[in-house]
Length: 88
Image (cartoon, rainbow, N blue to C red; front, top):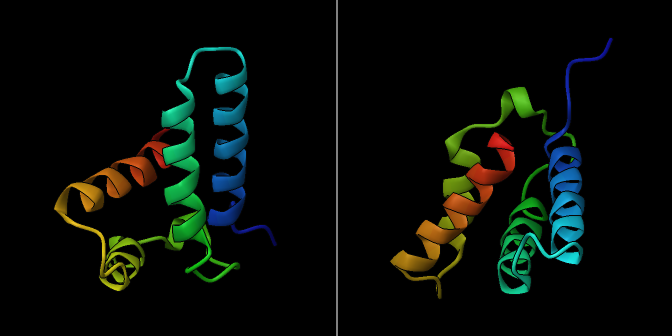
């Protein structure tokens, strides 16, 4: 039985949405690039079978802990970009 959407599916749909907005001029190219950059890096680090209903802050924090070169501003931006995807 269907248990709900996968995280990777929601991220893919959101990145497509951002690409369309970039193409129609309603999203700055630099912002679209930043969203895709953070989301691609994060989603490549989570299990592909992870359901949205099973997503926790630990999935983000564990990834952030691996980003040794990312400072506080970068961490905040990455968190914001991920949250935007799931509030879209």
